[in-house]
Image (cartoon, rainbow, N blue to C red; front, side, top):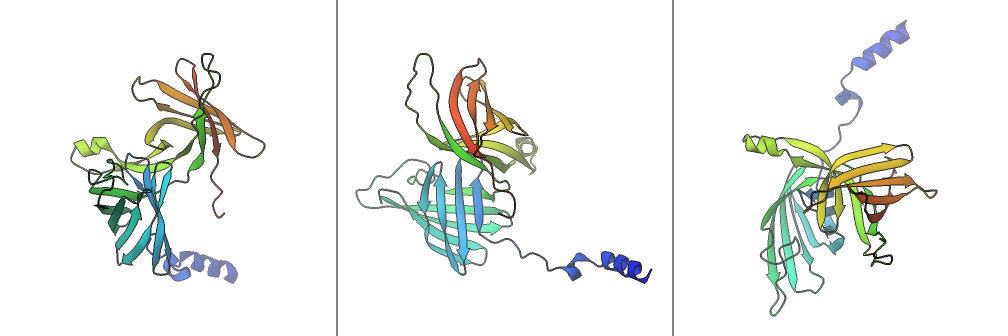
Length: 252
């Protein structure tokens, strides 16, 4: 009986006394930019901040990274070296408000309006800590009766989750976030209409821009562990061949 009473008393002790509370989340992690396939990956080793700027399938190394309280500062260069972009971010929990400044070298190409583009790119943007673990893989053009040997145009893709502002609450003048599953191509990101993993079969769908057709992707588990299959337009036409690797189990 004494042992039982002691056990019950331990169960009533607040968790703060029995275990150390986790430290507040810092800058390290993947920060996704709303409604885009862009992200910033930050790594912290002591006082050294490193990582990558992801623009679709492209990755740009971060350098001159610094952390000062809740402020992060770092730079990244365009592949041709024409542009040096300085990012300054203010961290507030799981949100970072970034400003972006671009320096174009004399005679250099100013670039477009993407994250690693020129002065016409976003001067300010908000990134949110990634909340889901992504499936990663590739997608390629599928053969058709008219074109049995198409250019495969292999691209990196991910299927994951992210938080986005609820537009209905924006219209009401309030703020609320919802978690959406997304399908991310190098320069496009689609909110999924459906996602179903049942045993060895994975099915997900999204709406194709332009014609507005729904594209359904049906994949099956392969002996090596990855999933492979096809993406079809509503009419049944096969658009893509896709392979995805499931996320690693927690703790790995």
